[in-house]
Image (tube, rainbow, N blue to C red; front, side, top):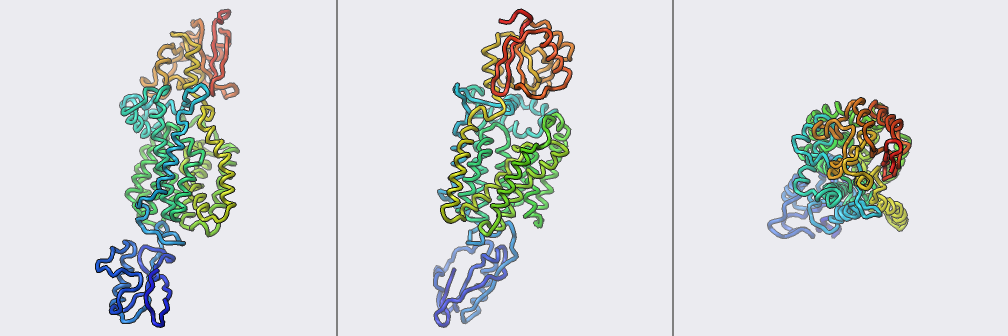
Length: 557
């Protein structure tokens, strides 16, 4: 606040008035003296004053011009029509370029995300061996193909992950760690660690823009410590990268950098097309802006080619999904209640509420609603929605007074800590392809016939080519690379039966007991032939899989 001498020695309060690019609550009180009375208290006498803030340049210039023509102190009123995404915090002023300043606290959220990401990155079990589940195995084996082979695959299946596979192909060209059983898990997962750190920094940037530095620190840390965020920070899939793109697109929307906004959000959509749901969340606060409308149109148009291709692949890509269960709706309900409670009251600025609440609730809610007709919902597809929850929680915590909120945080850290430890074990994922490969290596002899039941479980061995190459895949007709598919193609049912009955023993890789059986003719022939022509010698449970050894009658070891 700038105060000058007034008649009677008192200071006059100034009220905001019309200007350009600022909120009414942000107007700066000014009292300007006559030109011949010298500079006002608090004003620099430097003949070269600093360049005025760009947002307020017009208002200050007009006020100064009027002051030059005045002989007595007087008040000028300046304000502007507020822009929702460019307002400052109503409780204090923050310069437009504050986020560019280097401060120690700004490194804390991304640094914490990196430390949590590197902690237990290999998910080693009790035997010290790292773990990798089948979706990560798909990333590994597809990204190691030749570029032409990857392109041909995307024309058949998995186009939704195409850009990510190309990115990981480039990463593996630089360094692949020598294989997933050695240092390859670091090469596979480090891009997700880096993306999570970038997303945490982006959450802090959005909070700083809308609520100040304290809220920025708390929001960025809150995002980094959320267990689902930690989970996908250590996974060789695209979801952490998508979250980073959406978060920074949100920040660019607040800055009205529409070209950059469209480019970053489009990148997120091409990494996974369900990132387009963030566009609808952004529209809640930005739909009045012509820049946003043009950007949204560009994103939708440039996403259409991927949407058309992936729509043709949806049945084989997402055919395994069911409609959201009661657990999904219950989890969404808990998050929705938490979001709405955190958004209440004056502690959280309205501008932040208008950004964070739609981001937290709209993408998962819309995807679950669509999944009642077309089952497409998986929570990791909308991981970026957690940024909205972190913004609200961090801002609320930053405004808290007293010890009770911190007691609640301490209480939450206990289950969060247990959850975080569990996430760094192989048991936290559906299966472990490296454990399956190790178990097969112990039980199979070179040249043994191997049978995958169902055929998509071939993925358990595809990322261990040194083992898979020593076995004879009974049902395989064409390899994944040759057939431009993820798990290859299989022989007709008659040939599978012929090969099976001629085999002296078979190593069969099956889903855990109790899983639904595939009704396809090839899978039925496998099950019936093994039951009628072989003895079951042994069955071993291995982290989401069963390894069964069959032999001709009377020939079990």
